[in-house]
Image (cartoon, rainbow, N blue to C red):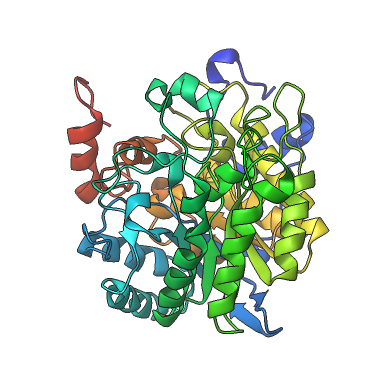
Length: 450
C-alpha cells in the first residue's frame, strides 16, 4: 500500500507518524521509532579525561555546518554571529561549531573560520554569547587538505592519490601530494589552535577526521608510500599524533572529541573502513581499532558521519533533491547511519555518540530520534540542515510542538550554496538573508525561483 514507485524513489511522502512507522515495519527497516519524546529532553553526561563529567541540558545538538561567512582573517563576522545566535537559541543542549582551520593554507575559502593569536578574542566573544543560552560548545579544528582553496594555497593539499575523486574531478589529476615533512609539522599547529580554543571558552575540542578532509584522507591512504600510508598504523599516525598533541596542552577537564567518518563508503583502496570487495559496504573493524586507541587517550565524544559531501552526499545526508538521484531510497541511507552509530555505541557505551541523518524526516524526525535514544543506538541526536532551517527546532521537538511549516525539506539548496563557497544557510526558511544569495549564485540561467 505504501510502496514507492520509481518516480518517487527518493521523495519524502509520509503523512503521519503512524504512516512512517507502518512503512518501516512493513519493509523490514531497522530504523527505531517511538512516540515517547521524553528522551529528547533528558540531560546527557559527557566524560572528561580527568574522570569528571560535563552535563548537557538535553540530548539534541547542532551539527558543524560551514557557513563560509567569516571575515578574511578567519574571525566570526556579523553573519556568523547571527547563525550561532540562532543555533544556541534553538534549544539544543550542544552546539558543535563548524570547521575552524588551524593554518592559513588549509582553509576551504577565504571566508572559512581560522583561529590564531589575532582572531582568538573574537571567538571568545562568540562563545560567551552562545553560553548565555546554556549550551555545551565544541570547537572543530580542521585541515581541509584535498578541499583547500584560498588565496594562500596555489593548489589543494592532497594526502594521497584518489582515483575515484580524480574521475569526478579531472582538475585533481597531477596535483602533488603533501610531503611527510609537511605532515610532521601539523600536530603542533593543532595543539596551538586547541589551546586558543580552550582559552576562548569552548568546552570540548574536536580533532576532525571526516569527509575526506586531510586526517580522514590519510586514514584511507592505502596507496601512499612512507610513514603516513599503507598499514593501519601508518594511516592513523597523524590522527593519533594530533590527538596526543592536543591532549598535552589542554586542561584535564576539557572534553576531547572528534567528528569522525565511521566509513568513507568509497571503494577500496581509496576509502577508510570499507569492505575490500564490491559493492562498497562499510566494515567498521578499523574504525573500532582507531576509537579504542583514542578512547585510551581520552576521547569521549564522537559526532559520527559517513561518506563525503564532495563524492557521495546521499550517504551522509539523505535528501529529497540533490545533484543526482541516489541509487537507494533515503531511508536506506538513514538506516545505514543509524546502524553504524548503534554498532559503535554498543562497542563503546562510555562514549557519547551523536547520530546524524535525521533532517530528511522533516516533522517526523523527533519520533525516530527519540526511538534511537530509547534503544541506546546513540547518546544524542544532531541536526545540521534542520538547524539552518528551523530556528527553534530543538525546543519545539522537546515540547512536542514541532512545526511542519518550519522544517528542513532536504532540498539540498544549502549544499548548492556551500559548494560555491558563498554565505550558506537556508534559502527556503531563512529567505531574507539566503534567498538573494541563492538566486545570485545558484540560479544562473534558471527561470523559476524556489
